[in-house]
Length: 262
Picture: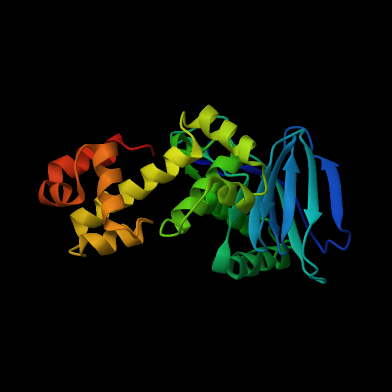
């Protein structure tokens, strides 16, 4: 979608979700931006994605939606804002289904409340906050994965790159089956999850070899290869060069890094 110009905004609703789940059909023509304060599971059009407290959620027009509450917090306010992006612009962006706001949640929560306080006088403050929040969570459209599961799996792998990871562990972390994860990776990236994990390990290894003076053994440990001999064998078999050669020849390292799966 395009965010060059301010979207058209509909009503904003602030409420406490007391039921364990809620279902609705999103209004035709209107996207939903929701800022939620509890853990849960979002389902939009059959796609199910877990989310953490303090996340922003996006749902498309006319989609069948469901939120299942998975934590027990009470008396928390959630904000739903309908918006309609402009149909054209100079810069096309993508919005993730779920964006974890992390420690920025309180910041956005406060701005939304300020905008609501001013609504009897002007809606522009609230609209400005909504527009800023959409830009904040937007991403380069070319880099956003079609499947939220693949995106979540990539994030889990990158956050735990130094650990011994199995495909089953990655699948469990995003609450889908081992076989389903393999199918999603093959459909979207053309590789298996195991191949992706190895690629990310070696990409990080190349970057560490080029940008730091860490001993090769320590580099291997940081990317999940605690055995130096195994680390050397994997790099040589996959990239055609061992860690020492890659460190000596920056050009070789850059070529290998670009060739790895992104």
